[in-house]
Length: 330
Image (cartoon, rainbow, N blue to C red; front, side, top):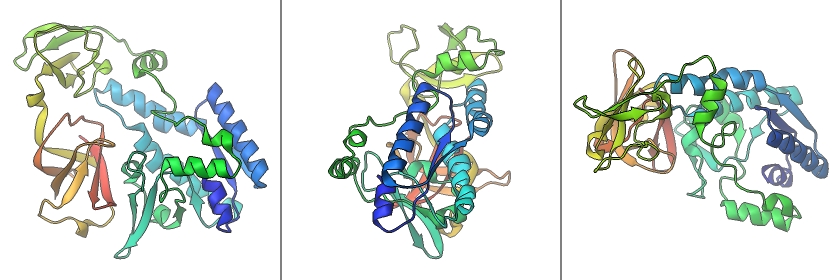
């Protein structure tokens, strides 16, 4: 529908399908895109980025879990691979802009380009795009951001694309759609997954676990441990293969640190708690302020405590509907 709407707005549209991960569904995606391009009378090509994707996204995904962190592959892919590739390919096809079907918008403010939230609160994807450069933000086009997913489905059906309108939503990580644990075992064959100990905050042994990479901060379900109280993963310790369990109250923090951060305009941030930080796609929007540390990290001080702040996950900053930047939690 992004392609259809752009054509209706008078754009000459060239379609590209990235081959990121080999699977039966990937072949179906390519076939669908080719059929759509033929129907719309537009040029279409397939770009093989499997090696890049394996090196930059899949290996990162594996390495993060093996290091005891919780990765955010969709953030990394969007900010460092997908949009960068679009920007590099566009001039080769005499295109001055590039587009996707992301549910978000953009706006210029005080000489800077910002991603802004999409109209559809349930499908808004602005959280994933805090790391894009000004060059990418300047030239990108986001035709679906002002519509809800239901409206887009309806528009597709009205234009005779019933098979598109009825497609299921794409959810989760594209290369690991189910439980990530079997994926780790398959694609990290040289790593020896061995059982270890669950302990409490005082170090007392509570039970045995399947290996620290299979647990993430904040996890409650799937621990396979039976206690007379609710416990959550507070910390994983790769060095000694230990997973620390604690009550939920022990998972609350008033500050955390970011690496690999990106701020669109540093003057957006003041000493007041007047910026919202989100550490989940749809949850935990909390006022905060930031402090630049001597070691290059960004300290995020929270106006109220947050629970389950997982190392490796992403944080995004907002003011109203504008994404001011973000980073990766240390």
